[in-house]
Amino acid sequence: MTNRRQFLRNATLTVAGSALAINSRTAAANVPVSTTVNAKKELGLQIYSLGRELAPDVPGGLKKVAQMGYTVIELAGYNSEGKIGAASMADFKKYADDAGLKITSSHLNPPAREYTKDNLEQIKDFWKKAAEHHAAIGCKYIIQPGQPSTRSTEEVAYVGEVFNEAGKIAKAAGLQFGYHNHNGEFARVVPGGTEPLPASRGFGRPPEGAKIIYDAMLEATDPELVQFEMDVYWTVMGQKDPVAYMKKYANRIRLLHIKDVAVLGESGMMNFPKIYETAYANGIKDYFVELENYTGGTQFEGVKGCADYLLKAAFVK
Ligand code: MG
Image 1 (cartoon, rainbow, N blue to C red):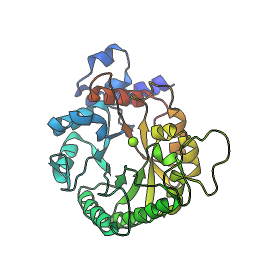
Image 2 (cartoon, helix red, strand yellow):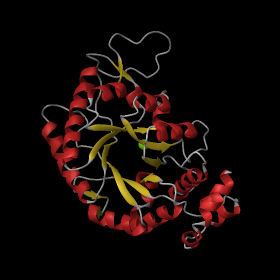
Image 3 (cartoon, rainbow, N blue to C red):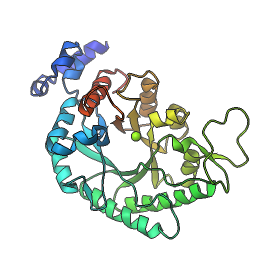
Image 4 (cartoon, rainbow, N blue to C red):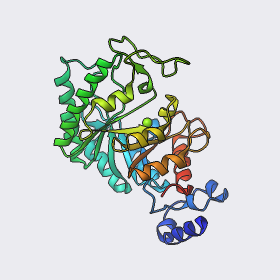
């Protein structure tokens, strides 16, 4: 049934597909779906995945990304001058438009890692300017991917307050603020702590008042102001089950990073069918492929491998 459905899907795209360069290696591997764009699937890519390979030719690189089957991108590298690398936000938007890619999200970090009453205004100013720049290009989300200093439950609670402020600023500009995790957020902190406790402490109960940083961040933030973009790979690396989190916090985890050790589906340690099943059940529409540490070829080849995997996968609608 799946093959027939995919065949019909592709048949309707013959015209669009014939305009695309077909990768002969993939075609030779007899993978029919991956050689044409499947218009039914919305595939997001975090452009950080392309590493340094995108910078020399952003317009051409984004066209390649679209030809692989990606339809949406999440930016990375917004700097204090309001640029992505050498490109202004407006230029970057034009390159994406020309390639037929939508920009829905962007990763950016405020200028301080340790949040204090003293630098709150500086952080708020950063978000104000960033929100303005991103609203101007029609972006939907501004997402912080860097973990602030969170050594104690008190520090996490204050980070939550600052996130709420960022959320208000984003909202006023018509955007949504979000936070993206790595594995460090699954460590525990205690009241008055000076450093996080490792995620795994072997047997025994955690100390009195200990909280998982990620859970404490969820608790400390207003659902109207702060959403979470769960990086499913880094959650597994934090010794937690991303599906359990998605089920427990269905109204908070609204975006995903779809990531594996390298090319999606190759390691066998990520349960992508279950992750997608849960994402659909929760109505999650925004997800972005991310590739890091790829050594099997160029980053572009690795990113294409990820698209091929998702385009072929029956569990991706
Ligand atoms: Mg990520």
